Length: 331
Image (cartoon, rainbow, N blue to C red; front, side, top):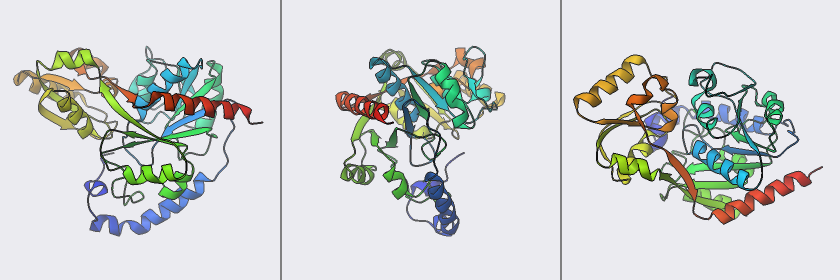
């Protein structure tokens, strides 16, 4: 979906008129958070956010997967497979599945580690364990109570924060903030903006770690693109962040096109972008997550990979190792 502008702007009439519906939605969501879920029998680390839309979950999952492997663990991703038609449980096979089958994020993640898609997350736990998982790395699902989480790490963008701070549909929050804060084990703030400072202060006041991180573009790709003028496009939660990252890397963005998150590109849309790039002598650039939805045109589009790097990796490593130890101590 494309986020309405009033979610990230000053107080508006639209948000005010939607408050009664938001109150009902929030009450149901808060009650749902209290339900008891399945104990997976192995540690479950959930990467989520407080709101709909993008915040950097996928790069965070990949960063945690690298850390877990460094700790001697065998992580397996468990995802709902948003945007895919397969209900699962199914192990994602990049050679066989398309984004329309399993969703773009699981397909991208499956290039780095085993990934299981299951519309009902609890049903995917046995299949994840059958892949040899010692840790289940849950991509999203923080507000879903069907599987017990041993650690919930929440990702927030430092530029966007929580928008207007209202619950859906009056704003972007998936549930009232208080019950979400109570279930947060650590907060990951991506970037150097100030919009997340208030939330970070509340998490820190509860004695929980606030971890700073930043997205680092692939240096070789940056070097290649700096000599070119590009036409950038993205169908992710926050396309503007992608465009800004390109510009901050010294890349000349001559044109940009923003689409809704998980946008199912049509042939006409992509061929139109390719034709425009050729006509204007531009290089067509998109995100890695978008590119997995565009395999037929992958030779004509340049991906722009990024990785998430933590400002204090030792703190993250200690936090994760300690929480895994505690999870395994539980009866």
